[in-house]
Image 1 (cartoon, rainbow, N blue to C red):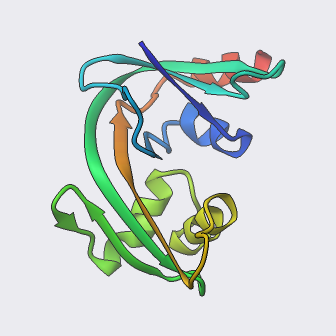
Image 2: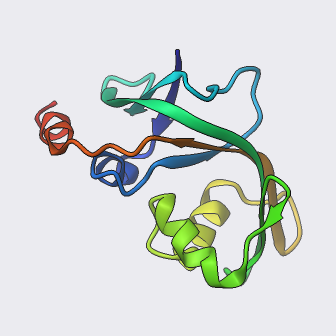
Image 3: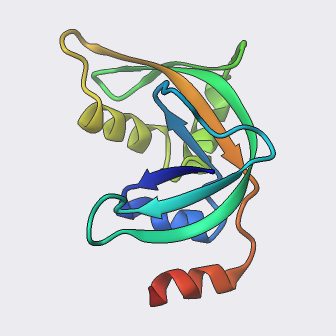
Length: 142
């Protein structure tokens, strides 16, 4: 079973089913479709909290390019280039308010060593969204 840790700001969107995907850097082993995933906040800290166990739906390559000005220059999922009109919806699916919020997060968390363009290549992992509001209550009680 594969586990992923999330910043605290993403806990509620995950528990509400609004966030059902994550973008991650390549690593030795990511979740596989059909496999159970554990979603946490604060992993490897004393504040560690299991948010949910969900089922992985898909793992596809992703490439993100953001300019320093906060604009999304390119988002490619698999071999499909995302249309500009869909960028805000994609960002919301990942727990952000819009593509500008997503770009600011990526610049703060993963700034490039140099230059005015942040480029990231990794994987987009999606799971079956949480639909049980009891999960939110359990998450807040923990």
